[in-house]
Length: 253
Image (cartoon, rainbow, N blue to C red; front, top):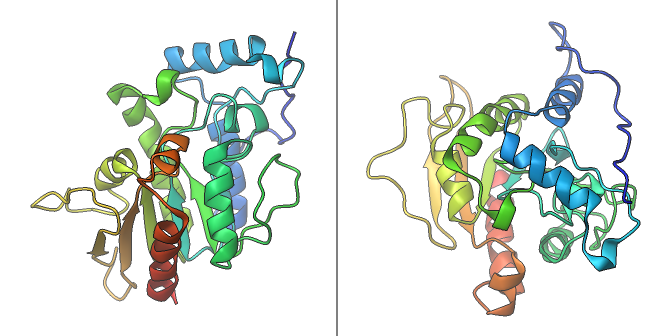
């Protein structure tokens, strides 16, 4: 039987006043990893772990919610959908151990945001520089389709990351679901969703108002999600994603 991986993180505690963003992200990661707010997702992520596909038989699964990860001083925040059942749900790191991650991190490597193009395990040596990767939903959902109430329960975690990642200048939404979740974020849109409501399109770009007077503004970019289906059908190609990441680097310089 496939076992769950014992957590390597220490017990969670709220950050103390004056602690830096690294400590704040660490405490938030603890809180996310222990979340059991969505019974359907808890059941699914754990069921997948004890009854994996034949290719994964005998492997140890993380089978917990996934925090975002990367450079705490990131200028670029990459927002996906949710962990893959046999990707992040298995490895314990977002976009790690599946083909979507292979495509994404290869592009981040070409753009200078990652030190290597492969992402196979949480301890594979991959490091992000200037980028942080996360998702609006932290548990692997059945059929990759979170329910609206599951999306809403997870929303505060993304908001907390946005608040802690003070240097982020560009937020990249991978897919229409990520864009929809970001448009609901008070951390980005304190005045509510902009009107007319932005419509997802690959390469769409939106300038965001500064969160406070004197603060730098942010930009929202969109790309098709690097899912296996989008890549195999040609909806998303490597040059298409490279172009969006190059624009992100220009805006975040």
